[in-house]
Amino acid sequence: MIEKEISKIDKKIDRMRKRVKGVEDYKVANEVFDNSTLLTLYHFAKNGSIDTLHGVIKAGKEANVFLADDKNGRKIAVKIYMVTASDFRNMLKYIEGDRRFRGFHKNRRGIIYTWVKKEFKNLERAHDAGVMVPEPIAFRNNVLLMDFIGTNGKNAPMLKNIEVQEPEKILSDIIENYNKLYCRANLVHSDLSEYNILIKDNSIPYLIDFSQAVIREHPGAADFLNRDVKNLTRYFKKYFDVAEEEIYKRITLCG
Ligand SMILES: Nc1ncnc2c1ncn2[C@@H]1O[C@H](COP(=O)(O)OP(=O)(O)OP(=O)(O)O)[C@@H](O)[C@H]1O
Ligand SMILES: [Mg+2]
Image 1 (cartoon, rainbow, N blue to C red):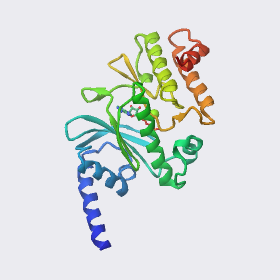
Image 2: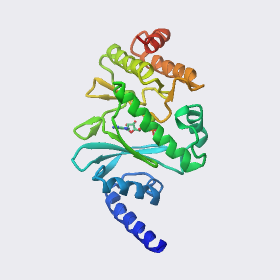
Image 3: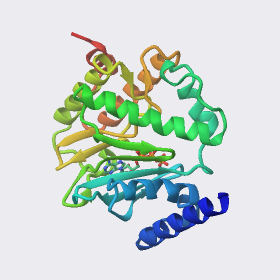
Image 4: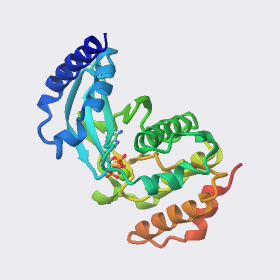
């Protein structure tokens, strides 16, 4: 009986391996597509959430983001966390103290899966609050599916990599989004910088990368918020005169 189950799983893994064969530009292939990840992807392939997995959008230290089509041809982003490469100690700092994730399993997999679930839940809250973020679609184990931010299959660049045309306007939009995140979604991003803001069509900022975001009651929330504000101030100072206190006030003023 068990043998039969294993052979079934092997077949699923094989099938999924063939599907991701086209993805040749990823760094450490076996590290990203280990058997357990292939099974998770197989689940999404079977229910139509993923039809074709295209190339990698960005290979990172802990996660790789891929472009994919769902069964209706909609472009989606597939974020796959590597179970082996993650900094668990750092993750714990942002999970413990957030009452939504009490009682998680404190082993490698338990931490990663909680991390992914947290990113999904945070994106959901932010999206419901009207913050410009990729709409979350689904999550399972170490894989998160979300809306693809880009135009004609080309991903929107990070704020860091563009020459900003109207910096005052962009900063103001970012602050407005953060104000919604803080006041309506009750969240602090906790890793906001020019790396985690994508600029669509040269003008629309999207906040991304929400795994470390915490509820405002988290004991570290005040420090994390201050750090986010400092990052924004530092970055926009190269364009015009920005006051840190002013940004802080506008983010935290809940009407
Ligand atoms: N929904 C999306 N649509 C388009 N591009 C995306 C999307 N999500 C992420 N990306 C791209 O992938 C990159 C990495 O994503 P993200 O910031 O969420 O991961 P990360 O946690 O920073 O990864 P690491 O820390 O391992 O480098 C982003 O800078 C962006 O270029
Ligand atoms: Mg990031």
